[in-house]
Length: 220
Image 1 (cartoon, rainbow, N blue to C red):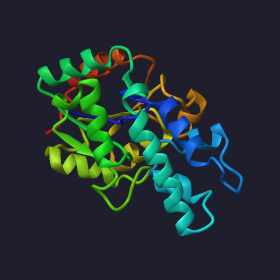
Image 2: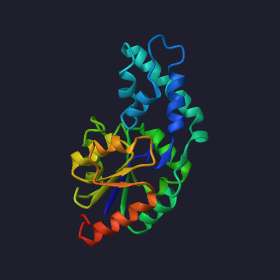
Image 3: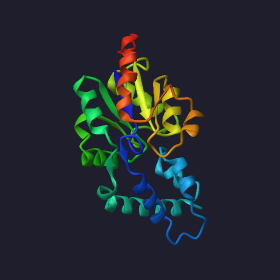
């Protein structure tokens, strides 16, 4: 069985880091910066996509992204931690022989840094970051990329994510989608993307996988 995970808001709690980095980037900005709600709505899509909605030209876009990333680099370790139960559940899935991957819109180097910092790196031989594909969540291409590199079929694969962008991407690729309710998105927002399952804690994933396995949904 193949199991894909989003990173920010799903495996790791970095929401304060993302918001503080955004606010730093927009300090002394002459235009109207995004509200917290506007920025949260874009979490799960590439950083440049989020900033492009507010930047007035390409130079301003690049400046905002650079300021964001500088702040993120400096404060990453202080503001990054696993959600409760994640490390144990992921370790158990790996020990059970499931094929695991992270599918994120985060920059590849930051995704690897995050996984290493919280102790998850050994369990994820495949990390699909923003540089891996030309199209990004909510497009299904990143999920399809993960399937191809894991040698997995959509049937028997699960994608766990906290945002509607994750769910839409997974649904488009034909995998079962699991909405993580501990992230920054409300359930009613996630419902609009039509996930296959909902879980309010990471430990509940095991029962979903067990039921799927008992019905023969074991994948390639």
